[in-house]
Image 1 (cartoon, rainbow, N blue to C red):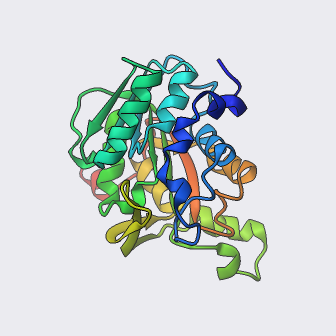
Image 2 (image 1 turned 60 degrees about the horizontal axis):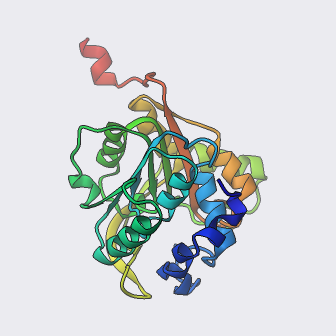
Length: 267
């Protein structure tokens, strides 16, 4: 296996055919410049190369399959991508067939309609939750598909806590970021289009705070790991709600759930 820093020297086509590298950075919710360094840092935080060996990976909103190439290079047993845009599917199938034949599956289907009895070791939902209206059902869908780990990259409803609360210290701002439970319904969400340099706007979706997401996931028996703090420290240009609103979190199954009043009182 190659060094992570050499990944795109071996697989340059996953950068060359990524339409996001042409997109203007001024567009809200866009990624930083798409280049070898930023993409490696992003996907290596989502799925560490040392943790994927012999695992099955489900990638929701798989785009051109870059995460799949990463996971398969570092020993994943199988990669499944779920994507609805035909142009992304065409590119991902071409590139993954070239480098990893018979080790991947790309499914053209909205995640809400994805119905399978199979469970995957690692489920990744990067850049899709803020385009989902019913976040509760979305979380239940993720849990129904995962054996051990769920990784979510999404947007916090508070865009830039340093600007919103400039007079309190960083520890207090972190408490607001991590504990306040807010779900904001947004009727002008921007989502990536595969066949144009523009984003699609006007989509109804939800921006979910980390605190709200934690409550939902804990009710379903999953607890947050320390990935949020780790990504915030190691990749602050991208995962730092102090200045922007994008975050990365990971959940592991514990089976310990928080109480719901009506369930506790009728049993």
